[in-house]
Image (cartoon, rainbow, N blue to C red):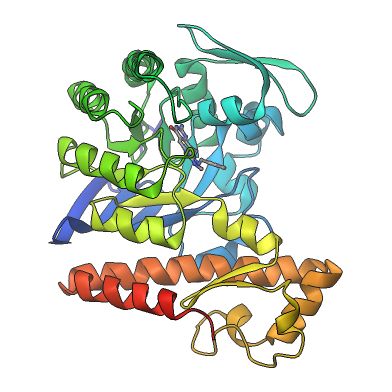
Length: 382
Ligand SMILES: CNc1nc2c(CCNCc3ccccc3)c3nc(N)[nH]c(=O)c3cc2[nH]1
C-alpha cells in the first residue's frame, strides 16, 4: 500500500516506453518503483537473495538494472514472512534497484519432490527438508508481495518439450485460468507490475490462443514461458517469431530462462526485451568464462602459463587485471576467488553485450553490429 499521504511523485507508476526499433529489435525503458530498466536487458539470477559470489554493488557496476529472485526458494528459506519482517527483499539483500520474482511453478516442477498439480494450484514437498507446501496463483502473488518485488509473475505450468499436443493444450489452458486468478488477486502497489506468461509449447496455434487470452485479461508485461526446456534453438526462434507479433508493442516482452549469448542475440533480433539465465553465474563457478571471442574453459591446461588477461580491453577488472595462468590455478585448486572472478567476468560480459545491442538499435546499426558480434564469436579465443 502506498502511504495515503505519499506524494504522487514519490513512487513512479509502472510503465514501458519504446524509444527506437531497428527491424523487429526494440530499445525501451521499463519504469518501476525502484528505478528504470534499460531494454534489451539481461537480468542476473539471485535465487536465494544473492547473485552468487558477487557483492550487489559489483553486480550494479557491471550495468545490471534488475535482478531476479525466486518465490520457490525464498518461501522455503528463509520464508516470505521473515523477509517481509526484515523490510522486504530489497532491504534484506541491500539491492535498492528493481527486482523481478518468478512465481515458483517452474522451480517446483524442476526441484521439488512429490509434486501434485490441481486446478487450485500445486502441492509439493520441499527439496530441502521434505516439508509439505502449496502454491496457488493467489499465494504466489502474496509471497511476491511480501518480498516486495517490482515485477511479479503469474503462477503457470511449463511443460518439458517434446510433449504431445493434448498435454501442451491442457497446461496452456490451466495457465490461462491461473492468469485470470492472478490478475484478480494482484494488488498492484504503485510502480509494481504483473506479467502474464504465454505457454503452448512449440505449437503455434496454442501459442496464439495463449497470447490472445492474456492480452484479453490485460497485463503490465508478457513473458514467453515454456521455452529453453530442451528444444532446439530454431524451434525456440520459430515460437518467438509466431508469438511476439501477437503481443502489444507497448508492453515489455520477457523470454524466460534464456540464455546463451547466441540465444539472446537471436531473441533481441526477434523483438524480445528482457532475459534471465543462470548461465553466466553458474558457468563462472565451474571455471568457464564468457568473452567477446567466445567461451574459455579455464580448467584447460593450455592456460597454465598464459600471462594474458581474458580481455585487456574489458572495463571489468576481473577480465583485465589477472592472468589466465592465475585464473587456471584458482580454478584447478578450487579457490573461492576463482569463482568470484569468473562470475564477475561473465556477468560483466553479458551486460556489455546488452549495452552494445541497446546502442546498436538506437543508432539503427543492429544488423551490422549483430554480424560483427557473430564474427568475433566465430573467430574464437586465440
Ligand atoms: C532455463 N530455462 C527456463 N527457465 C524457465 C523459467 C524460470 C526462469 N528463471 C527464473 C529464475 C529465477 C530465480 C532463480 C532461478 C531462476 C520459467 N519460469 C516460469 N514461471 N515459467 C516458464 O515457463 C519458465 C520456462 C523456463 N525455461
